[in-house]
Length: 352
Image 1 (cartoon, rainbow, N blue to C red):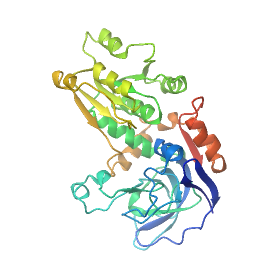
Image 2: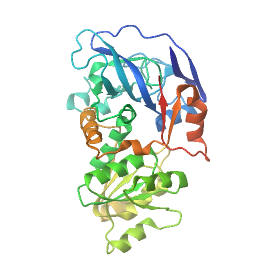
Image 3: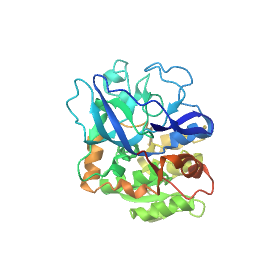
Image 4: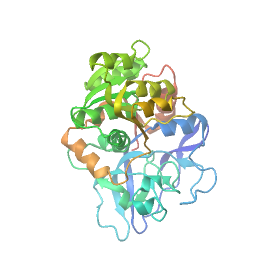
């Protein structure tokens, strides 16, 4: 079968790999439909391996080369012994985080913080940019008729964004700033709007700013032209935003978040910083500001996110800017997304 396989820095090959055998106890054999290219995938391609293990992973012994893809929907082909919650022919979305179930965090329901966490498509034998894959049956959620295969592939990044917004305790009527309109920022803006917040997006990249405007959830500001903190305080009597969802992983954006949020406001650091960022902690103390980091999502959140998508309140498909074939994954996917002049934001790969 064909699969997109990561070997190392700028080395992804679409090639024939051995087909998986029948699923074992508690497993399902899937035929992936659509799979998103994530920022983590891009980091691996540009400078990896980083999280993809070069030596056997402690949880499951996986290592390079790695079949990519952890944001995907699929059709169930076959179920292993003991599987009763899903049947062949059903369409599903995959929750890719793998955890030990025994460590300090897993025993407290914080499985996304498992000390030996692995991930389908990054540190596992299979991934979603492939014609077939085997995953634990406990990690798939059935998609209702109202949710398309394409939407099903967006549940994973949608859950990341939702966790960021929920961590900031956004409520109906709140004013929310989203810094960065990449895929997670765009989804955070959509989710904040679904919650009932008034949303403003800050984005300097014209392609991403255009995507943010197409979401029709609120104003979009260019921080290179507008002092975002001054802008909001001018409109709120000097108060500021109730919450900020920082999705860019950029030092200046984090500084803007702190300057723009109101006293006793909440900042969720959802974008991943690749280097240290300088802030003034005294401002946090003087203004009683909460700055909280987020990592992934609660592993049990799939049914809730799928329900929101099914209801039409969370139109995640709006963030997709390109749909490509597996054969084109390197040039039309990874290279385009990494290019400074690239015209795409969220690319989905058709795995079949």
